Image (tube, rainbow, N blue to C red; front, side, top):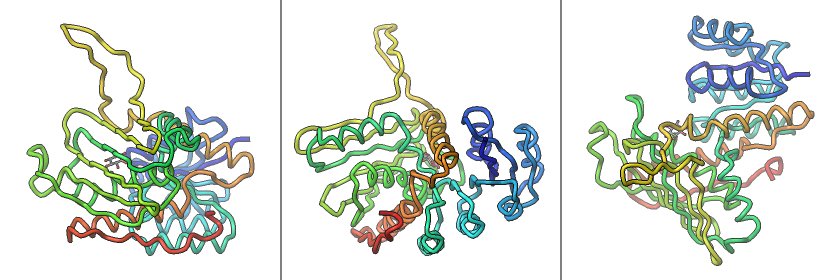
Length: 335
Ligand code: ISE
């Protein structure tokens, strides 16, 4: 039997998820779709053979909807996730879990009171083949004890709505999650550095930015976020340990030799670079639900950790100081 899923929000990622759940993910079916734009919701629901719900609340309450995917605007996530927990429904929420750390704590409290995990956050990098290979190498002890990590996150360009704070909250948040996962520990501080601004960006946007994180055991992680680099979507990550170093492989592509040059393409956008990761992420979520198990992917605690760390990065951007990151106690549910 397929899991009947309701999708809230049909912007770029929501529409992609509807399509993925309909055409790519096995064992899933889109039952209902909602969006603040009802015309758009109706069009996308029609194409998927689903119903258009009048509102997110109605979709969550619909007895025919067994599980929910939230791809609405970030500010709407907290109340929608809380409504899913109250309805006892499994929910996959796109990142960020919430825009506010207090709201993330409310989600954690509600899920803890429910006594079982029902929330998964859409940090898709944990499903990327290259990052998974890195994780296996690190967990096998092949680089020894990690000492440093160097990360690069470059977007070709960003749209008008992108603000200076989004470099932490929307962009480097992926490194925050994937590095916590790779290293298996929490960050304790961050400092944000502001290099010379690129002439490619709007004058009001601080781009690039550099984030210097420190983990509980003293690993230093530097993250360059440069969202108007101009040449493509370029994600790099290297972890350096006592015994060696491991580097994220670039996506496989044939090297072209021509006109005296050898070259490989750089993919243009994150949707191209992480297309497979998005597929695997939803497939594994659906597989767990079909097996009657709770989610195994990024939890509400991981969503909270990302919000706390990126809040601290934004505070450091304003003050220039090293800002502590204090997560508090991890509830047993997320052990
Ligand atoms: C965007 O929201 C993403 O999630 C992308 O993965 C990231 O590369 C981009 O910088 C963000 O704006």
